[in-house]
Length: 241
Length: 111
Image 1 (cartoon, rainbow over the protein chains, first blue to last red):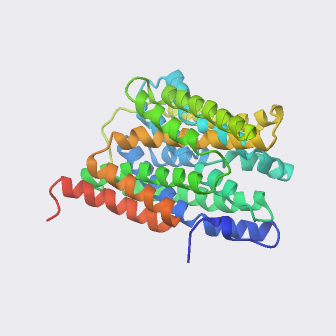
Image 2: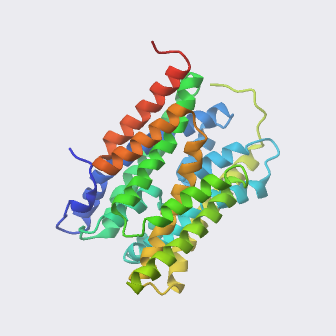
């Protein structure tokens, strides 16, 4: 089977066929979600969280970066404000994804919209924006998100049992594999999302320049602002031409 | 696996988890609700579509630069191959394999 860009795979039919198309196109991304889930379950157990606490995190938060940032501050006298600020910073991109996915979420029946908001994630965002020929974007979005969520929680459970199984070198390299996963997501944005490309380069360069100068959260916000200004400039220049 | 690390009280642990869960949900909903106040023509939608990608790029680029030479190699090869082929599973497996092989090679566990 091929997992190349879903742009070229026209899907006839209604919401169910779009759901199946989404599930099929999410297989590659699910591999990354499984890896992250395993690592999170393992890391949380090593940090001392119980199984119900670990699984609750994956089931109710469903955002890897937020879960790892909470884990980083996990201690007997937990600084709740610091946890809140950290979580808000690292999940700011989910707000931007919600903004971008708003037309898709608005097209959902009212009873399922809250679920649609809850499962907004990186892979569902990029794949849904790429899919221009599906009949139901909402169905396609859930086709990606439902398996991702299920695998994420299941992999967390497996990770709990694998805690301490990996040697330090393997664990460290698997943790870095998360960056590889995100780099593929950036590649998907470059290949298939209807958006200008220069802002990505600007945001990446600003991110590198601010690394070590600002904390990760503020650095991302500044980089996104720089990317946004670049996007505006590119679009205005396009209009002029 | 057991651990000797001191832990927060159970109520504080669950309060933290559910506070984080609520906050992440608010962050997600804020974007969807915020879109009601945005006049979205094609141009605005393209700008809006660019922003999450900027956030991802701003996370990936510095994190990749902080890696070892073999980590950076893995990211560059995976990213480039994805741009070329568009094959998600292939690139994911290749990237993870390169990370693992590179780390073990640097640790002297290979050859």
